[in-house]
Length: 597
Image (tube, rainbow, N blue to C red; front, side, top):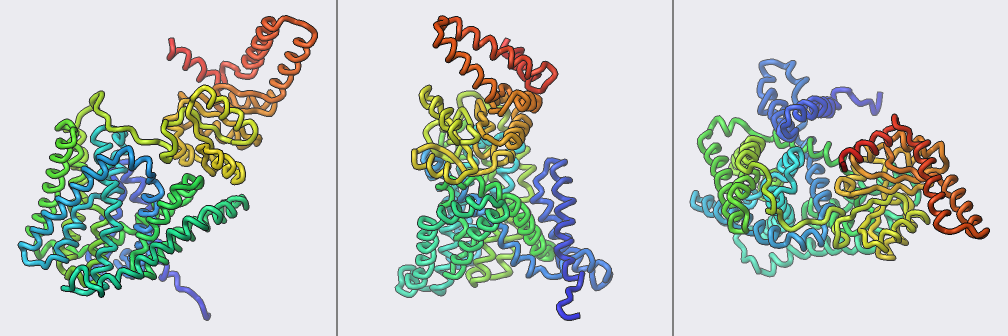
């Protein structure tokens, strides 16, 4: 039958999904980064693992990757989405507050490690260009592995964690210039003058491509997402997000640069919009899946025969990279004022190689800058050092010990870098009620941030200078990115009963001790919200009746003091009747009182 597809053509996809289904839960249970599991699985399933035994046991073909080239081509999107997310999470305010650590310690680490490794490579007979490419690849650590380990151990905000994040941030920023330099060197040819007209002319298409992405982002990105958001279709919004990432990557690739660089620029541009958190939540599953496929392809491409042929050389390079990175970061940490324990912890966290070594060396090998055999040998050594990161991190946490008081770095903004203060209140719903709540908070100088699903309300609030984001607040990840984990209170003002209930339940599950005040249509819904864990539920019918009573009592001459006392007493009676002791809200109220006493 014409157009019929053989089930065997989907074997590689099925193998990857089965691998992800086994590795992710298993490694998370062992508290080991699943990334290392994907790399190991790639080694086993690749042509240098079980694939090497297929001539002797043909049945192993069912458990090996048949088309590594196709997997590698699709896996490139893993790095594209990773760099897009890195750009999306950056903000000028965050860079400003941490500029001393990012552009000081981070820049020195990359420069020193690159120079030392390049010098060692040149001493072994390599030309300056391939030596510099290898130095750049081995000087970068693994953002994906290290940040996941820090998050799992809740060490992101420790002194060592902040220093580590700063260095990783500069390393991520350095990837784009490194890739641009490799592309320009490849276009300009070998041995030419760096400032020759030929080399400068080769840079012109790249500059035009970058300017095109920036111009599109500045002029059309926000209107496009606003138009899509008005359709109120999650599928359409997801399609628009994928279009932005892949489209920016393709424009970058057409001008001779990497797709990852275009995606990174698109992420930076989106970080300035009110849609950044919703885009983050939408893209996150794709990034996780494709990044897993990327690391699987890294394992598939590892030629372990090189290790068996030159074990001492590869182990020596891996050990040298670990010792050099740990030493440089540790000494720089001391120089920037960290206690020696925290400096040593940061050094051990950043000692291993990273995922960008594969990206940089692959680009350098495909452009003919680094000989393929040398590049593959360096990749094996870098991967071995990366697989040691969990062990090095465990050692680093033991050396660092508990977080000492008073040693924090300069604080960084928790919500997108907008505003000078960390928001104390999160308002979900910014219609008439939400605006009044925000106005009252402003009057008391309390910092807040809002979330709203109506793009018109979001646009209007943004024009007024308010910090508000478009998105669905019933999702945990969106609330987390809006700062719920550090907020003192959540106010839900939406006029959608089911939506309010979903948000209250989600927020209570995330923060058992959070103050949650929610709007209810009537007493029945208020009781339901108390069951779901609301600290206070405000029914509109009850409040309207109390205000009407207050107005008529004032008009007929009852003293104001008596009126206020009676209104408060009646409100408390309603609250006690609705928030029963066995309700979750009632239990939370008793718990909070016991904690305060």
